[in-house]
Image (cartoon, rainbow, N blue to C red):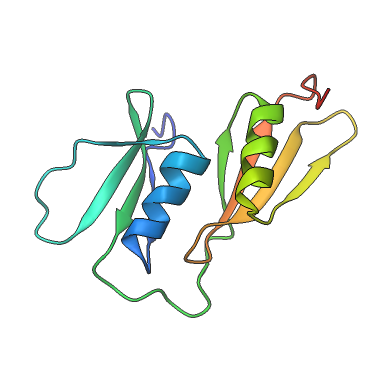
Length: 124
């Protein structure tokens, strides 16, 4: 029986730029990763590892492959929008009727990211 999602894995074309994106822009933290015999990183949301990054292989073409996107439950829409605006990082923001706010962007290697915010958050 499956009880939940464990993590996503993505290939990163540039480790430094990719780690900057996920840690400084999205707020994940680099955490414990055992020696797996190849370079990479594990990124955490609190105490939970949510993203594994590979630094040792080429990004496939097209970058997303068969996985369309990674979605994260997120809080503080105003702060995230401000961080993206200050960084000049491209994104698309939408608020679905009776649904969540969604901020879509691509990581530095082309993986599509969706950040979901509660529908009651606002930009004021």
